[in-house]
Image (cartoon, rainbow, N blue to C red; front, side):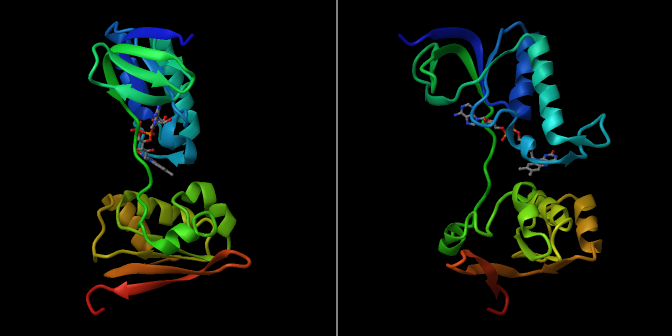
Length: 228
Ligand SMILES: Cc1cc2nc3c(=O)[nH]c(=O)nc-3n(C[C@H](O)[C@H](O)[C@H](O)COP(=O)(O)OP(=O)(O)OC[C@H]3O[C@@H](n4cnc5c(N)ncnc54)[C@H](O)[C@@H]3O)c2cc1C
């Protein structure tokens, strides 16, 4: 028979948001249960240096998340390895179903399930996913060492990824549909000064070009959105 656990506060997700909620809820004596999900530690476990965590000039993402988990645990947060597959918000208490079969009932639920990569949604991108198209420089950059890499976007993620990729690429081209970035100024300055990075303003990716055998990307087709 499925186990049922009741908690005052159920936290879904084990990224920085989940563990922060865990610390606060535990200190508020809410005896929280935190369900980690498929990616214990969240997105920061996929990166290397984190430079904007106050108190550490530089810390490795996975190390930081181990520390956050230990912190939440030490405060009294019960950390469970499970994935929530269904959440019933109509019932009181709330009812969440775990992949393990456990039913979690809770007086309150904190959703800290994070965010996912923002894909362009074009056909050729899908065709070459895993074969030259990636949404994670730290995961895949190493595979493209010595090659020319294109990054699409103008926010923090795009700029950070472009900078990180200079460790591997012979050249990085940042393609952005506008002529200004949304990224933090300090990142923008680093990007614009970097000798390996070229920016292509007012351009949009139309197609990822590549071969079938061996499957891989050979280039991109872009369009100037000012001149066509
Ligand atoms: C490569 C990379 C580098 C980054 N570098 C930095 C940086 O240097 N500085 C910075 O400030 N930010 C950085 N970020 C952004 C930062 O990682 C995110 O802003 C942050 O992780 C968001 O935290 P979160 O807790 O909201 O979600 P996430 O970290 O995305 O965690 C989501 C959690 O929800 C869980 N989950 C999802 N669905 C379920 C479910 N059904 N049941 C249970 N659990 C579930 C997942 O398992 C995961 O644990 C980086 C991101 C990436 C990808």
